[in-house]
Structure formats: C-alpha cells, structure tokens
Image 1: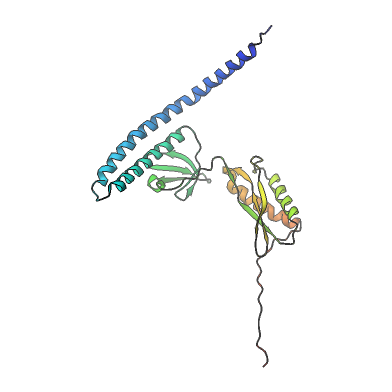
Image 2 (image 1 turned 90 degrees about the horizontal axis):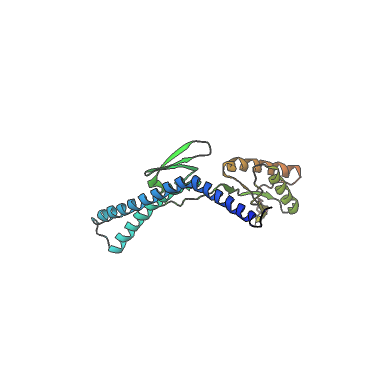
Length: 239
C-alpha cells in the first residue's frame, strides 16, 4: 500500500532528474558563455586603456574624451555579449548593416549571416557598430493590405481575408492574425491583413497570400479599384 507521501516523492524525484538533465545539457554552453564574458571584460578594459592613450593625443575636453572611451568599451563588450548569446544557442535573426538573415557565426572581426536563399554574407563588425539590430526571433508578422471600393461589402471582404489565411498552411494560428480597416483613401478602403508566420516562410507566405487574396476577391465579385482621375476640358466661348 502506497503512503500519501509517495506521489510527492515521485514528483520531487522527476523534478531532480529534469534539473540534472538540463544541467548536463546546458552546463558546457553556460561555462563557455561565462568564459567569453570574462574575456570580454578584460578586452573591454584593454580597449578602454588603448582608447585613452589614443585620445590623449588630441586636444579634447575631459568629458568628451571620457564619453568616447565609454563608447569604445560598450561596443567591445556588446560584441562579446552577442558571442556569448550565440554560444548559448539563442537564435538571433537581426537586420544589421542593411542585411537580413540568421546569425551563423560571430567572431572578433566579422559576423556571418545566412540569407533565406542559403547564401552566407560576411559583415565586418565595424559595419555593425552604431547599427540597431532587429531581432525577429522565430516568427514575423506580415504587413499586407487589400483595397476595395467604397460600395463593397466590408464584412464580406474581411471574411474572404480570414478564409485565405485559414487555407494557407504557413500562417500560424497563434498569435492570431490581425484583419481590420486601416485606411480610407481617395478612391478605396484599405483593409490591413497581418498574419504571423515562421521566419523561414516569410517571403513565400507573402507571395502566396497576396495571390490568394486577389483571386478570392475576383471570385467573390469584389472589384479591386484602380486609381482614377477626372479630366475636364474647358473650351473658350464663341464670343
């Protein structure tokens, strides 16, 4: 006969086993990341001293010189922080230096990005300094739109958009897509269609959904308006 404490003991045992498995799995990566950060601290101090000696040659005010030294330290430590995160297996999908892709490798002098077409781009880290990295994570939201005339049935148009997204296997159910009336233009009403997809499906999903939206509107009899201009020709009177 099992005692009342047996389930608690079993739960505690399973928890200990799970924690042990996590420790075995992540301990080497965590140790490597810690070593990288320690090396980064020493490199930051060395870079600060080097920057101080270099800036001493210029006639700069002390506050300006200190600010430049701190900027140099922050840039060096940020580079080692990125290397540590990459070593931990954290996915970084930034948009840096005008290039977009998955970070494959971060070294002291360059960063390698993998494009969606599986090509690699090597970016010198001097190009990254001062940039604002955009980390997409694993999912991205498409920013699509369809335009319908003012006399169109908006409820029907929104239903069509929902049906198109539901039929596309690349569209994620969670987070839920956003579909709403976003703009009132001169000749049409703009309906925003913003589904979520996995990052590798971003480009393909955009083309598939746009094509499906156009076809579905045509089948449903919703015309897609074109820009129109009214031209009036004024003629002089016979007098």
